[in-house]
Image (cartoon, rainbow over the protein chains, first blue to last red):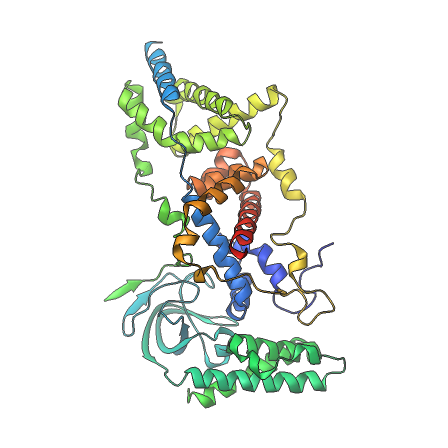
Length: 87
Length: 162
Length: 233
């Protein structure tokens, strides 16, 4: 059972940071929370690395390489386009 | 308005990763705590400790918040070279001593919280947090902020800031 | 000389999603493209079919694991798009609109084949409480500094760059994404693998920004954990 926020200290603990990271990385944290978030990152190497790792993970996913339109599907689609043109 | 700013060792903003150049004006839209040029007043310094410290001149729209100042224009004026390895170590040791004292003075056993002198390798920001956090364990948020104010005074003295 | 301050994601050696996916086709090309398609320009159609394929496939694969079926969904989607093309108003980008159609078709088909992955599957996934990192990694209530890391994650900056961005690593990432629950796989594929914006994903899948954000984070957190195991070994 996860403990409620703010039980231990007035700012965030690392436990809270790793779950709030979703909002932070998307720049969706409200102003005050964003400052508290960065206040924590400033002294906590662990969390700073975690955030970097989340971004690295996204960056690696971006390089995974997208699927290319298979030749047979391309031909089928072109045929569908021609059928539509004629209709 | 004159203020201070910490940067990473490579001269980039610690969170923004913006590459700062001393003397060059930087402009930004102010969206407090999100975008804008961020800077410290002396009392904010302990919260934002980083590898390199600079003086910064702020201009344009300026917003003061609880932990920092945000401006639409800023220009680094000079590096505060006094914030060097020696100063960082001295600050860390000061915080470590404070932590030991606060832990000993506490009504419940907190000695396991106090780091040894060797822990200074974890950096001044962490040591500062530990001391303030120990103060908080003993006396709540007010004590935390008091400890941070102590740390700020130490920095202003040591670095001859105004 | 004045510089413009803009926040960036941390300058990591990997490069951000935005840096990898610089979308050369601006959205303002949409009306010109639609005109060409309506005029029967086969080259334009092939180009857009090729360009949109990775994202359409990602959407389809969120609802069916079979590649063959996903490709059928893509084809059905294009038929639907062409039929409705003269009614496209440009309220969203063409790509967003096409993805929405693909999502609708994929969903309908999944329901028909009794493999229903309705929109609420995203909501259901979010409702299940889950942490990005297992609780055991953090100090307990009786430890000094409760809630803090027991031991820090390692610094990936210290890994040799060839290791971080190696083929082996990318294979691992690909596998990890593949093994995610559907709702998360679809979102990380659209956002990170193909570079869709949050708005585009929300429009296409009919989910709220909050839900999209939570599922994206859970997906990334899972993949991060796999990478951590690999790099720490």
